[in-house]
Length: 135
Image (cartoon, rainbow, N blue to C red):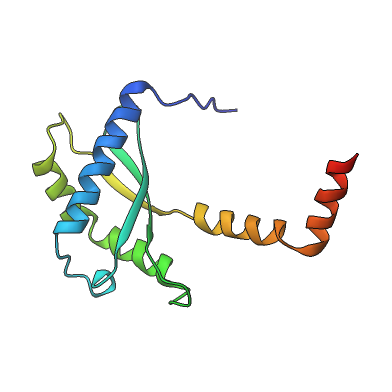
């Protein structure tokens, strides 16, 4: 069984620096990919490997309600296609020994939170929660 160590302070600091730089790059750059045109992308978290050569980037498009349900998958795929271009910009933006390889992953935490909120607001669940408080 593999041991999962908590990230070091150095990894956390580097991840946050990469996240901030990526936010600036995505806000300022006009990426040519048609799936990224007119799409605002939020970078929620960046986790770096212990050797700082790889970074997992959790991202999601900022979509208004009722928009394309496949927007998340399409945006992540487009970011994966543009990863080498974004990495080049990142290398010029930051002063690190190595510019990490970027691995874009869909951040589904917003969907999980929304599902949890809708579940907790159901009348039968609310009733059970209320009866549990009275005991």
